[in-house]
Length: 264
Image 1 (cartoon, rainbow, N blue to C red):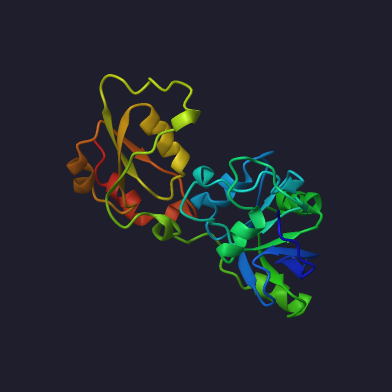
Image 2 (cartoon, rainbow, N blue to C red):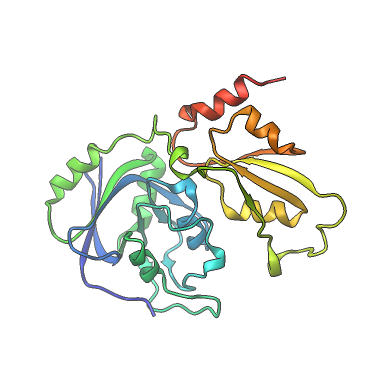
């Protein structure tokens, strides 16, 4: 069952808008999370979105109205932890129902110190984001500081432009990924015949991309985002995968440099 709290939470945007709601996840008064506020239009998959490294440094809201109804299952997580700064929802489910779930959404976020805010008009928020684009914002638990101070803090948040967040989520060293789709594979016998070696330049990839590659018979070698051409050639790959990731792609200079200098 989800844990419910009557603790006040607020979402303040840089344009001066302040939404008042109820805290979940990390609910200690004084807890704050700051970042770029963005939205996701998926009808389900909140767990995958929350753990997607592409959302590093961002406050996420979903357009679907109810979140948490099927809890959290470890095998559905796209990285080692939730990556968002905070989560904004219209309604947090009172309980979750799923035989695969190991915990509830609120408890999972609380474990990782991530605040959530429920009970706000997410339709109004998404309309604003669609019109104005992503806005900087702050989620704060409790009734202090003032709304005006939270807006001022939102305005002071560094822009996502110019931030190399790929460096924060990329692996530090060469590794291997061997997990496939398991019982979810549409064709379990697909991985027969020749095995292809794929080198992945990991700028913040989701695990499910890797699972699909492994499921298709690939031997997957993961490399840091700043791996050199020599590092890539040392893998002797049949193919090269460059993942997506968070932040401003224009400033992931090491990755850009590797390919700009080694074009054939």
